[in-house]
Image (cartoon, rainbow, N blue to C red; front, side):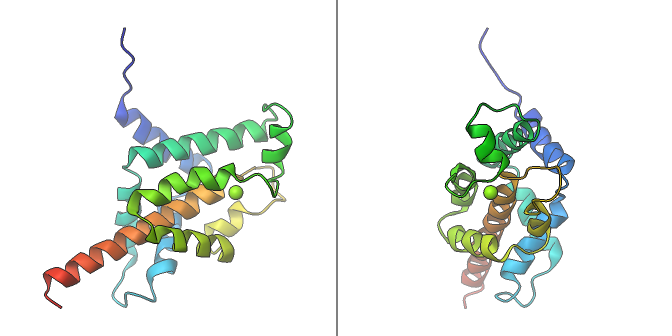
Length: 171
Ligand code: MG
């Protein structure tokens, strides 16, 4: 039998897994708002929520969400092989595969997402602060980058759309 995967199942799982790890769409949208509010005076949260929703419909994004959360969970349960277990569990400095995976999200909406991704990773506002808290039992080595990347991609999407609107408006 040919292997075939139900796309709806992947989409639903990625949303459910985010939620199960304490990340709501609104939390990501807040990061997007944070990134874009200074550029667009009229920007409202609703636009950011919609943009995040759209980013989450992309299969590349869903794949990264599922892969990253799965690795975080396995690290949390101590089920990875050594030395990968220790590296992911401790969010080791030289381990950069979490960021590389997140780039597959940033790249969906072009290169301007890169700047936003780097910036938000440095400032760590809102939900990113919670995800970076190393004192709790949860390991979010992959998820912090994934959430930052979704917010950055949603920001790029808004920037592209605003540009299109301006061009259509003839100014
Ligand atoms: Mg990380």
